[in-house]
Image (tube, rainbow, N blue to C red; front, top):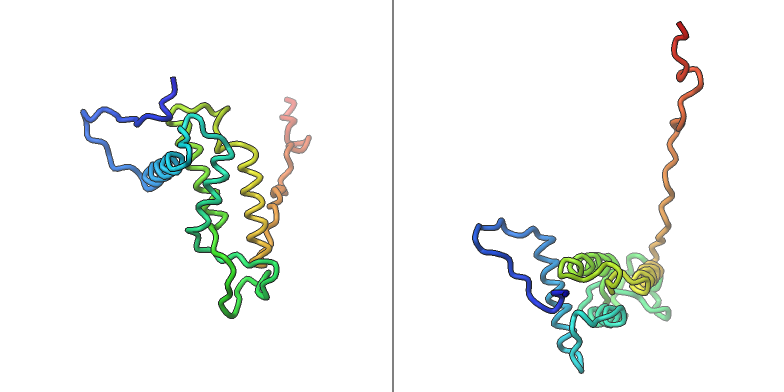
Length: 168
Protein backbone atom coordinates (compact mmCIF):
# COMPACT_ATOMS: atom_id res chain seq x y z
CA UNK A 1 0.00 0.00 0.00
CA UNK A 2 1.31 3.41 -0.97
CA UNK A 3 1.17 6.40 1.32
CA UNK A 4 1.20 8.96 -1.51
CA UNK A 5 -2.11 10.40 -0.36
CA UNK A 6 -1.40 10.41 3.37
CA UNK A 7 0.87 12.53 5.51
CA UNK A 8 3.96 10.75 6.76
CA UNK A 9 4.52 11.73 10.39
CA UNK A 10 7.64 10.35 12.02
CA UNK A 11 8.13 9.60 15.70
CA UNK A 12 8.63 12.65 17.89
CA UNK A 13 10.59 10.76 20.56
CA UNK A 14 13.96 12.40 19.89
CA UNK A 15 14.58 15.89 18.58
CA UNK A 16 15.40 16.03 14.88
CA UNK A 17 17.86 18.53 13.41
CA UNK A 18 16.14 21.18 11.32
CA UNK A 19 15.63 20.08 7.72
CA UNK A 20 18.06 21.31 5.10
CA UNK A 21 17.04 24.04 2.70
CA UNK A 22 16.63 21.39 -0.01
CA UNK A 23 14.41 19.21 2.21
CA UNK A 24 12.27 22.21 3.19
CA UNK A 25 11.86 23.25 -0.44
CA UNK A 26 11.06 19.67 -1.45
CA UNK A 27 8.32 19.51 1.21
CA UNK A 28 6.87 22.87 0.09
CA UNK A 29 6.93 21.79 -3.56
CA UNK A 30 5.24 18.48 -2.71
CA UNK A 31 2.53 20.25 -0.72
CA UNK A 32 2.02 22.82 -3.49
CA UNK A 33 1.63 20.11 -6.12
CA UNK A 34 -0.78 18.21 -3.86
CA UNK A 35 -2.86 21.37 -3.37
CA UNK A 36 -2.85 21.99 -7.13
CA UNK A 37 -4.28 18.48 -7.69
CA UNK A 38 -6.92 18.99 -4.99
CA UNK A 39 -8.04 22.22 -6.70
CA UNK A 40 -8.63 20.46 -10.03
CA UNK A 41 -12.22 19.80 -11.06
CA UNK A 42 -12.69 16.99 -10.28
CA UNK A 43 -9.91 16.71 -7.68
CA UNK A 44 -7.10 14.29 -8.49
CA UNK A 45 -5.45 12.14 -5.83
CA UNK A 46 -1.66 12.01 -5.78
CA UNK A 47 -1.77 8.27 -6.37
CA UNK A 48 -3.76 8.83 -9.59
CA UNK A 49 -1.81 11.72 -11.07
CA UNK A 50 0.09 11.20 -14.31
CA UNK A 51 2.53 13.10 -16.50
CA UNK A 52 -0.31 15.15 -18.04
CA UNK A 53 -1.14 16.56 -14.60
CA UNK A 54 2.54 17.40 -14.12
CA UNK A 55 2.70 19.16 -17.50
CA UNK A 56 -0.44 21.17 -16.66
CA UNK A 57 1.12 22.12 -13.32
CA UNK A 58 4.30 23.36 -15.01
CA UNK A 59 2.27 25.47 -17.45
CA UNK A 60 0.18 26.79 -14.55
CA UNK A 61 3.36 27.92 -12.78
CA UNK A 62 4.33 30.12 -15.75
CA UNK A 63 1.92 32.80 -14.55
CA UNK A 64 4.17 33.29 -11.51
CA UNK A 65 7.42 33.39 -13.51
CA UNK A 66 9.95 36.21 -13.50
CA UNK A 67 11.91 35.38 -16.66
CA UNK A 68 11.12 37.48 -19.73
CA UNK A 69 10.74 35.23 -22.77
CA UNK A 70 10.59 37.25 -25.98
CA UNK A 71 8.09 36.18 -28.64
CA UNK A 72 9.14 35.66 -32.27
CA UNK A 73 7.58 38.97 -33.34
CA UNK A 74 9.33 40.99 -30.63
CA UNK A 75 12.12 43.27 -31.81
CA UNK A 76 14.22 42.03 -28.86
CA UNK A 77 13.85 38.34 -29.77
CA UNK A 78 17.30 36.77 -29.64
CA UNK A 79 18.94 39.63 -27.72
CA UNK A 80 20.49 38.66 -24.38
CA UNK A 81 20.22 42.18 -22.92
CA UNK A 82 17.40 44.17 -24.54
CA UNK A 83 17.80 47.96 -24.22
CA UNK A 84 14.14 48.67 -23.42
CA UNK A 85 11.07 46.99 -21.89
CA UNK A 86 8.56 45.08 -24.00
CA UNK A 87 5.20 43.36 -23.52
CA UNK A 88 6.47 39.78 -23.87
CA UNK A 89 5.31 37.37 -21.16
CA UNK A 90 7.13 36.38 -18.01
CA UNK A 91 7.67 32.65 -17.57
CA UNK A 92 9.28 30.27 -15.13
CA UNK A 93 12.96 29.90 -15.93
CA UNK A 94 14.03 26.54 -17.31
CA UNK A 95 16.49 25.97 -14.47
CA UNK A 96 13.79 26.53 -11.86
CA UNK A 97 11.47 24.04 -13.54
CA UNK A 98 14.24 21.49 -13.88
CA UNK A 99 15.13 21.76 -10.18
CA UNK A 100 11.43 21.61 -9.22
CA UNK A 101 10.92 18.39 -11.18
CA UNK A 102 14.00 16.88 -9.52
CA UNK A 103 12.63 17.66 -6.05
CA UNK A 104 9.13 16.39 -6.89
CA UNK A 105 10.54 13.23 -8.42
CA UNK A 106 12.42 12.50 -5.19
CA UNK A 107 9.42 13.40 -3.01
CA UNK A 108 7.14 11.10 -4.99
CA UNK A 109 9.33 8.11 -4.26
CA UNK A 110 9.85 9.13 -0.62
CA UNK A 111 6.06 9.10 -0.22
CA UNK A 112 5.80 5.51 -1.40
CA UNK A 113 5.55 5.95 -5.15
CA UNK A 114 7.30 3.47 -7.39
CA UNK A 115 10.19 4.71 -9.58
CA UNK A 116 8.57 2.90 -12.53
CA UNK A 117 5.33 4.87 -12.18
CA UNK A 118 6.86 8.21 -11.17
CA UNK A 119 5.07 10.81 -13.34
CA UNK A 120 7.89 13.31 -12.72
CA UNK A 121 10.39 10.99 -14.40
CA UNK A 122 8.27 10.44 -17.50
CA UNK A 123 9.86 11.05 -20.90
CA UNK A 124 7.18 13.63 -21.74
CA UNK A 125 8.41 15.76 -18.82
CA UNK A 126 12.03 15.54 -19.99
CA UNK A 127 10.93 16.50 -23.52
CA UNK A 128 8.92 19.47 -22.20
CA UNK A 129 11.89 20.70 -20.16
CA UNK A 130 14.21 20.37 -23.16
CA UNK A 131 11.77 22.38 -25.31
CA UNK A 132 11.48 25.10 -22.64
CA UNK A 133 15.27 25.29 -22.39
CA UNK A 134 15.72 25.61 -26.16
CA UNK A 135 12.87 28.10 -26.54
CA UNK A 136 14.18 30.32 -23.75
CA UNK A 137 17.72 30.13 -25.11
CA UNK A 138 16.59 31.24 -28.59
CA UNK A 139 14.36 33.98 -27.22
CA UNK A 140 17.20 35.39 -25.15
CA UNK A 141 19.92 34.81 -27.75
CA UNK A 142 21.88 32.41 -25.56
CA UNK A 143 23.20 29.31 -27.33
CA UNK A 144 23.00 26.12 -25.29
CA UNK A 145 25.35 23.52 -26.63
CA UNK A 146 25.83 20.04 -25.34
CA UNK A 147 29.04 19.77 -23.42
CA UNK A 148 31.46 17.37 -25.02
CA UNK A 149 33.15 14.89 -22.78
CA UNK A 150 36.74 15.82 -22.11
CA UNK A 151 39.26 13.48 -23.59
CA UNK A 152 42.24 12.97 -21.38
CA UNK A 153 45.72 13.33 -22.85
CA UNK A 154 46.90 10.49 -20.67
CA UNK A 155 47.05 7.07 -22.29
CA UNK A 156 44.49 4.61 -20.99
CA UNK A 157 46.97 1.74 -21.11
CA UNK A 158 50.48 1.90 -19.79
CA UNK A 159 53.14 1.59 -22.46
CA UNK A 160 54.43 -1.94 -22.99
CA UNK A 161 57.86 -1.12 -21.54
CA UNK A 162 56.38 -0.03 -18.21
CA UNK A 163 54.34 -3.18 -17.83
CA UNK A 164 57.30 -5.52 -18.19
CA UNK A 165 59.06 -5.93 -14.92
CA UNK A 166 62.70 -6.68 -14.53
CA UNK A 167 63.03 -10.22 -15.93
CA UNK A 168 65.62 -11.23 -13.31
